[in-house]
Image (cartoon, rainbow over all chains, first blue to last red):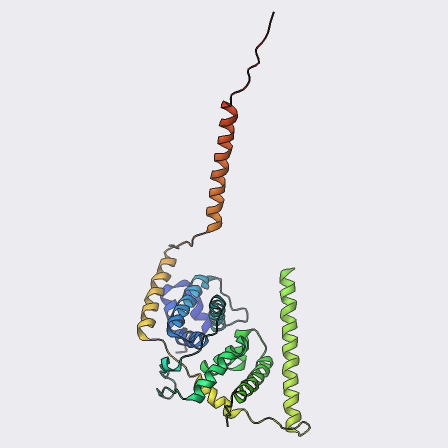
Length: 185
Length: 125
């Protein structure tokens, strides 16, 4: 029995409240993960995740796949909420590594080590100093594990542009780290 | 007009992205061919460290279940046609404006009607 595709799930969710729960289960981890790495704390991540899904529920009837998959639409809602959050606070949060509790997803190797050494903290702070678009790219690529094409759909850019932006982002990150005496080999 | 301007901006962004992508691809090719110096160290070690830093996190089970039931309730409310309306300040302002306008007209009318006037007395011989 083949699994229903995303379009079928979305149409089912429009018609049935219970079907929206399936969509929620499918994407809640990813959206939470994305938001957490953008805002840096559990409380705001939970708040913004809730708002993302409430907004998705209220606008679901208006969603149509015109080249933008549902997952990308959901990420855009999350992105806009995070952008508003940053604007309202006027600050760039720093991820407190001591507060991070890492739990591996079922489809990943079971690692639960919290790393809080100086190099990791410096790297985390360097990522926070990056321009918003670059930071978002790293979160989508590494924390979410998305391909360049998927990232391009979310950020509204071509795959080639994402590759180029990724390359420049890593160079900028390395330059920032070397300025602070951190060498990554 | 707005739609064509945003379409133009999107097209320009795509074109710039394509040029940027082609530039990067060409630069990489030239470095591989030795036409440009390979002054930059490989980025793989940095990618590995970034991957370690940005490891996936999961929400707590309490939060996940709580939000799921809240959303289920909201979804059923919506399907039953019950929508909680957000406060609309503009509509409230309009209603207040109409009421005050009506009161102002009424007050002016009453004022004109009962304002003591000089009575013209006829002076017939």
